[in-house]
Length: 252
Ligand SMILES: C[S@@+](CC[C@H](N)C(=O)[O-])C[C@H]1O[C@@H](n2cnc3c(N)ncnc32)[C@H](O)[C@@H]1O
Image (cartoon, rainbow, N blue to C red; front, side):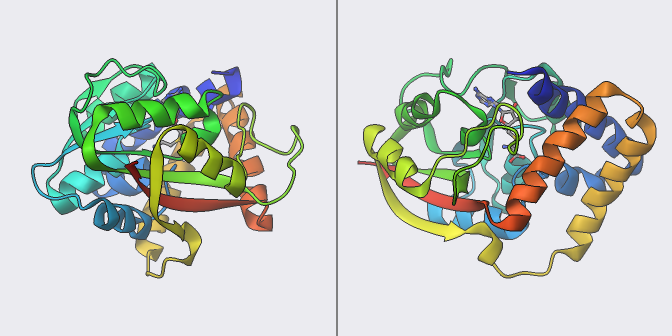
């Protein structure tokens, strides 16, 4: 993990949880889902993976835990979170009280076929070992269980100084090769931005948390670095150079 990634996924993640606890529980989910987008994207994944009450869900690269907490809230799943950054692990425990393991998604300290389903949202493009992430997800999900991904896919060549430090965006074709190499079959895919739904209130709450974090910490190097990472990502998304894609997969 580079210093820039640690600023974004560790330091600012923990600050986000601190601000959330001050603002109140209504702010937890929107702020803690910042990395994965909208309730509509999560609903699409929950539906395609067939998540139902009591089902064991692994969230690999869980960040602050918002997506798993959303699935608990809407579908009463039993999640386990895996996340390499200590600050994000603490934030997820503090906001949602969910079980969190500090580890890398490419070396899960979990037994084979333990979960009914797994997802990994906005994580693959932040890791050098992208095939390792996919093969580990396949290993820990029981045969027939669903695997969900949100991946930011490149639609053109992206120069190193355009992208958030430490990120590598796969192309759609490269991603299909990774799925095949990991023994995964694609059931369905969806461009996340094309999912309809009103979410102004959700975005307003997330924005308020971001603004409070900025008020408190904008004079720090970690905040400035994290902000630069976000701005680079925002520019690429705004131009359409990367597109957030949702995938529902199954072991072949
Ligand atoms: C854009 S954030 C997404 C967080 C969360 N999945 C969400 O949707 O809100 C990317 C996350 O991937 C995590 N990550 C980076 N490298 C990882 C690795 N090798 N294994 C698992 N997670 C990793 C980061 O620490 C960060 O929490």
